[in-house]
Image 1 (cartoon, rainbow, N blue to C red):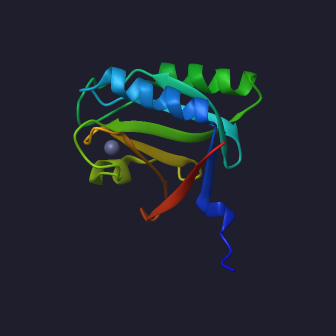
Image 2 (cartoon, rainbow, N blue to C red):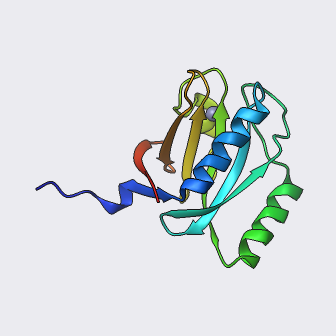
Length: 140
Ligand SMILES: [Zn+2]
């Protein structure tokens, strides 16, 4: 029997998955973004935030929004477990800039592609050496 490395699986509450995808669809054609909080490899809460760049190909989160959201996550007794953003017209894989600008190597990076009729959601780790690992996303 094959064993699955638990580090390569990220568990996400189905409700959070839905909120995340809905936020991305509602923001299109602008790239949408937000945070996922929870415990360890589990995402329990979705925090959609405004894309400061209001761009269809880039996203940025302002310092104020960042601090405010991190405070709320702490108050809830959770930890930051993921960052998500949409790719309105490209596939669900980190772009050159995503890899270059990724500053949280310990949390998962979720990309929602709206390229096709059905949204495609993929989950990654990007380490300090800019290496991309694809994780299995399991809904709970
Ligand atoms: Zn991207």
